[in-house]
View 1: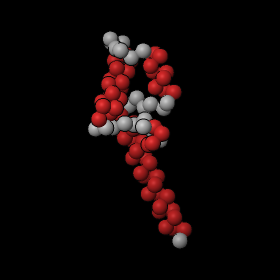
View 2: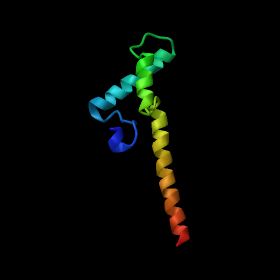
View 3: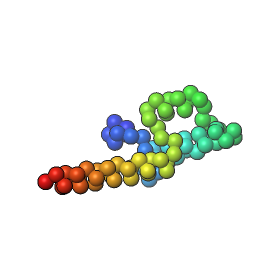
View 4: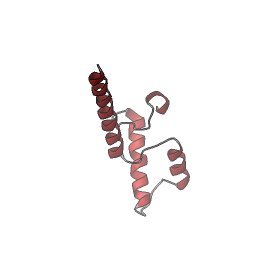
Length: 81
């Protein structure tokens, strides 16, 4: 997924992978709250190593930022004409 899309922000609607990502985020949240979780430090390190984003909200902000930057660059190009 990362090789194809350039990120690990898999949407929930992306089938089994999307649901798995949601579960990882949930388990990570439980771990940080000191609750019982299947997330281990080793798993956190593995996911961090590929640029996993632990917050779905952060993923949306990142995508919004990309869209804004793309339009800004279009505007710059338009102004330069």
